[in-house]
Length: 313
Figure 1 (cartoon, rainbow, N blue to C red):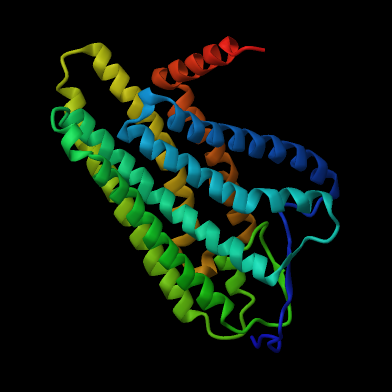
Figure 2 (cartoon, rainbow, N blue to C red):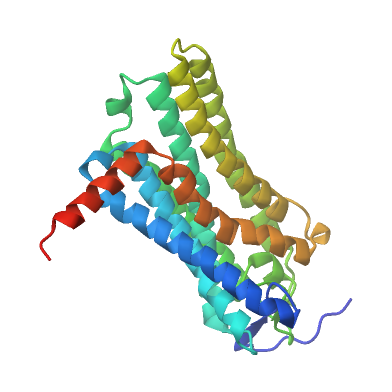
């Protein structure tokens, strides 16, 4: 089929999550609550791990960056989505669309490798506790977060520039609730084969390599846990690993579903449902799963609460 003539676009129209007017209000209220919980939870975790001296360990260093990333990509998508629920014109300027795509790719790829770094950190802590201070030094921790940020920024720029330097057709309706690469590809008049290949190859590499690190780390952790003599120690380790693996499974399953399949196999309605999980639900759940069930975090919250009550009125 021939595509329409190329044109110079100044804005895009986001189709949103639903076309049913009666669902706009309930969805706005629901996602506003979810986004507010995500912001409070992740921002609170960033502040807590910075101000409490007992949380200055590699585990909480990675947790702080995970919270920053979750806050980043939920904010790249959430506010604009909420505005679209209460406005009649769901438009997004051309440059804002490119910016939203770039930041979303940056944060979502960074999350994959931060989760891998956290899995490696757990492996060293459980399997080599005596070497932990040496292996997970401050320098190593910074390398494990800096490399994913730099790599993600590089890949984000490549994909965003490739898409937005291409020729768009004269229709500008994006069948999604944010500017994602797959819906944008359907609007291009020029060939998308090279861009699709870049997305497919790097998506497979990012998902496969980061997941491999997680699986290898947790396989070794499981072996170490099964050798523990203390039932309490095994229960605590299994509980920690189970929470982490739950988030990993949900995130990786939705991303594999979204990106590691041919474009012809995609249903945008199904993709939108999957996107809600990793753009809004997972950033809300992560502070709860990684933090609120943690006794050290609860202790830090109690100490801060007591200190606040001691301040003179």
